[in-house]
Image 1 (cartoon, chains in turn blue, orange):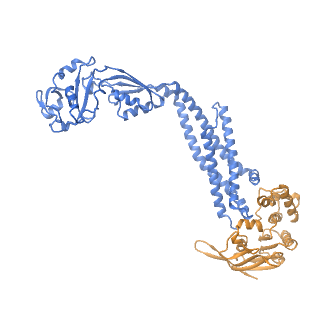
Image 2 (image 1 turned 90 degrees about the vertical axis):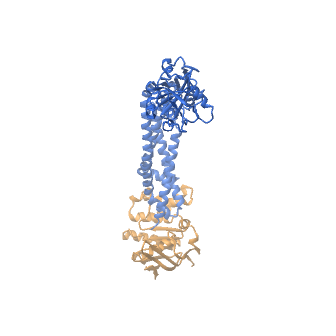
Image 3 (image 1 turned 45 degrees about the vertical axis):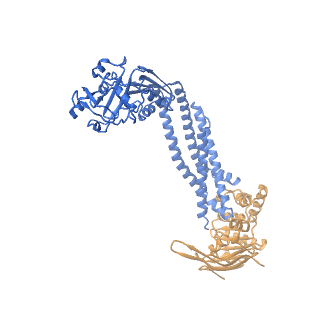
Length: 395
Length: 223
């Protein structure tokens, strides 16, 4: 110990070089981490007082969906519930548009296999994935535009169908003809042609009856579709999650962007926190950079320091001091330098932080940084000393 | 008197990628306490290698070296060197950051002499014995002349009171006056303190001052 302390004190240049290297790295990292922590605390406070709501609203369906529900697509309760189960969600609520009034089955069919009457009527999903939809309606609701629905004449006739003009032209079908969809469907009489492309409208009763004929022909339950709603508000736990939540719901197939707007009222929050987040990001980059570059520089300093001790190590070896003892002396020296450097770095960072009003506490990150530096220095000293001792014993 | 150090048919080669140099070829020799030995020879004759084998810095490829009847190969080389040998080198090998006194005290510190007063007293005595006073004791090696540095090195070699002193060209960096001083100190150690001094040297003055002279030639010892 005496030898080590004497060595440190009597070779001030070498010792100060190592000390300063460690001090500087610790200072930058501790200062950066404290500023980051300060900003994160402020951000947390802003988060606490900020409530961000994601609102789901229906797009107009007039151009794409025809008039069957007043150009409105129902927001499915099942989807709202599914979204409500995401971790990000605090609460959700919605207003019923027309409780228990609109009842619809939506079935996609494959047009290529549908019209020739072959065994082709497979239901592939309740969403609008395919190119042809069969849509049935029952119970004209107050929301339903009677003028739009009645001309189809589907309420009374279970075997009626209205098909798109383009399908009719493609297959040479005209009003009054009978078409066979196969797969359990009875022959359907074409009552009218509609302008909507790739559509076949059939009565809801027909679809309901098919549901119970075995086979998974209708893939959404009647109940799920039995209530439509609008103005869905989903309150999130963390305002930072808003955009991710929107993407996630769309990725999961809820609230298809084709049919719904999803908007989060997080713009004020974003503006308020943008600078803080930027600063945190810069500090993260800075600390990572300092740790990477500093680690390399520190290794260099320690190797240089150990090499400066090569002459001393050689003398000690010639005096009959064991290699283990010599290495432990070097380790002790570096440990002392590291501890002094780390302590000075932390103290100077603490002073700077307090003076600038950021506050300072010894966090786990700072302890990990200190431990990392000690381990790095120790390992490098150990390896360098071992190599020097192995090489340097020739007289 | 029985030999303190016996070298029995020792061989040592240096190997590089393509060349094998036979530095020491079957050397057998004995060294006794109370005698001053010199080993001379041209550069590359193997004399320094023989010294490094005797000081257990290198291990012989063949043969054995006995210290006080015990093979040094069975001992820990560091322990053997620390406890039994004092080694003096041409380039002194002093710690530049320590004073002359601290340099002499250092081996005692590592050997476990706990009391600083005790270490200091012995170090001062040794420095005094080699002709260095209190003024010199406080100086660092770079503040001393070559001769004074070598005297510090001799004092340090004696700090743990070894029976055998090995010298590798101890006067090689000194002028004739300082060389004479060092030779006188070594002779004093042999004849007044009964130590065995083995010096590898080119110097004719050193050889003439010795009791037994050996020469090395092509790795072999000749009288």
